[in-house]
Image 1: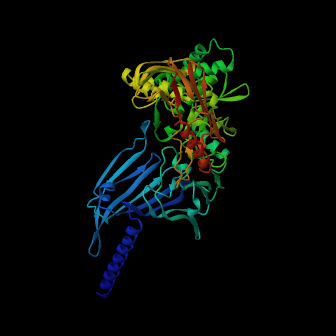
Image 2: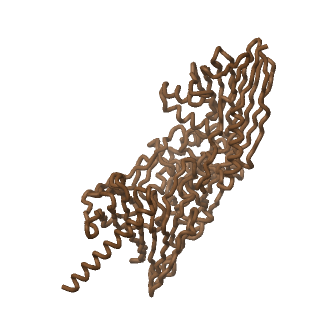
Image 3: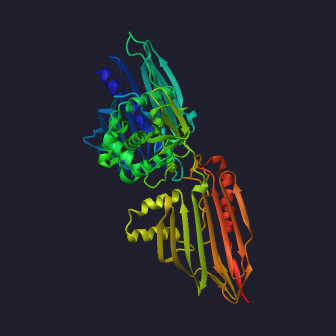
Length: 639
């Protein structure tokens, strides 16, 4: 009886202590709806019958701090891939009571396919838990296990969450003959403390961080993996049995190349005569290797539709080229495999190539792991140089990489033991050129005029791709969004657009802008800066340590020509403005008095893909000066 009373007293004391601690947390995080009080993941690695196996145990607890929190956090999701098995899912609510908490178990579990944007078929699954009885001060708890069936694909761990986190921890226990390595990536990794606990046959590694702010997401920033602190874990080697020596897994690019070779070594091994004949027909008039590759690339772009699949190992192994050709669709690996095979049938040296898009911050030489890439393309060697072909975008001309591959490492697989890591070049601004020519004149209290825009490069490719899926009304709205200028009173009267060679585009519109000029006595004030490019590239630097991401280098030339009404002359032109921020943005604004016309010429050149935090101040000074110039008007005065 005394033992029972002691136990009850201890439980009551613990509950009171727990609630007191949570009151302190509520005060500390005033203004937040909820916090993660504890998030722990532990991975247990074993070798059974010579095979590596992993079991992950996960526990997450969230404390609700406000009256609206129960409606915001009443559901939780558990995700798994085809390489993982979900086991022993448990969820419950802890509801504040007089002597601690009442525990209400989750009874409502729903599993569904988890869909990702742009993925036609996804092998991820989502289990949704609905917590009962939630009120302010309650806690939600979820516990589950994940069995990892292939430890080549080790889990990553992000320490921060979308709400503040009090304790965040990842640990792994391995036998001593399993050698692991790790990398801490992102910013502020010094907040993560690592400890190691060694027993007779095992080692446990633990990475922990405390009192973490919620992460901030910026629309103009690169992917969160560039800056959120996270752990990448991998197995370097393991010993399958006492009779065998260590078996290497990962650690070098050569290891990764050999692993990837297993996915493609048996693909397209048997020649297909129908596909060979098709290649011969496509390339019959081509005499040079570059011509052959270009014709094959353009044929795949025009005839094979890109459809993204993620289906277990099917997400890594290309389908047979002749099947992709017959079906007329495929994912990136299918299209890469088709290009590789067709180019080889044409006598070209072509190779499967793995690459991470710009969503991935990693480099192969630093992080030679599967997490580094998420895409496959084809590399063709022509005259001693590699040309990279990605037919998943039907608008990109031959020889030009998609914008989201610029500056990224490509792992070109020559053979099982041979490879090359090549950096995809950044396309120069001269390739991404916009020439905007506007003619305007006064019509009472309005401006009337027309505009012709010639664009080439990535901006044109995007527009060409978008317009082919729009009806007439949507096309008109799209063109208006491009030609609109001056003010929100802009009226588009007529428009036209043409797709030219290499998917360059010409856009035409005539327009009226009511109430735009300002008349004061005998003078008219006209601000010829109908477009104010880059004025919104000012960066709020408060608490921001994350770069601004820019899609591509570019050059913009804008010319506005204004007719001077009879009986008027130009009495004021703004001065020349020329300024640049080193390796960021260069701009020049010039006004010319041509007698019967005034011409404004603006030139901009973007020379970077990322504006780093140390460059924010320089960037902002330029933008502030540019904004000041945009307030300038010309003055014409009655004779």
